[in-house]
Length: 152
Length: 116
Image (tube, rainbow over all chains, first blue to last red; front, side):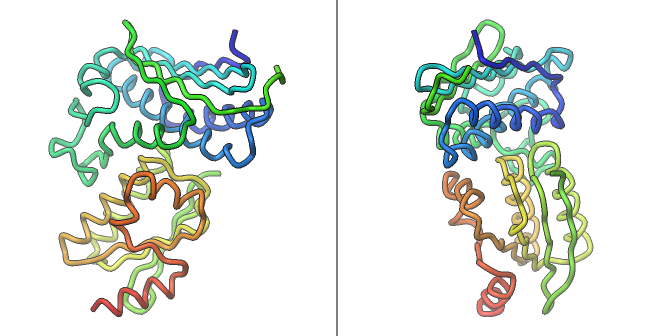
């Protein structure tokens, strides 16, 4: 069972809340202070990606975040339920080519979106361990960092 | 903290002061300001990020978009940032090679003048 579970409406405003909760739980789980910024940024990236997909394909569905304090590891799981988003973006790490994205794939376009792969690249650059998998419902991003553990 | 934006001219260059968090929620406001400045013919920009507390890939996209817009007018967009936690995301994404990143606004202005 996760230490803390959060599900939130797929709105950009709630991504900040998710970041704050994740950082607070990471701190309590004994994640080193020097890693908390990385946790905050990586969780924000994963949640932003999920919110974007939900807004395009399933705005009524919540984004789910689970934070688990395992023995010596702090694990974060962000799950979306927008399978079409994963497929249209060619799977995790692919460059976005989907409704709403700039036709030229340029961040200078009307939406000024960055290709999906950049958010994933940031996550992979920040998290100690990353696992990105497609489920029947959508995409699951699992990230973890070392922690002192045992503070459930 | 929410996002606070301000801008002023200095030595012919428009300085954009950004304070707070630039993320998927607030980045559209920064994008709108950069577009407004370019539409008002400000093509030499320095974005002062010394008071930015958080920046994600959405924010990076807005900055890259701004750079592309000013470059279309032979302009420039330089950054002022000394915070390691903000610089880290530029390094991870390789954008340190795309932007001129300076320690102070005066240094950014001087570097721009030197290139002219």
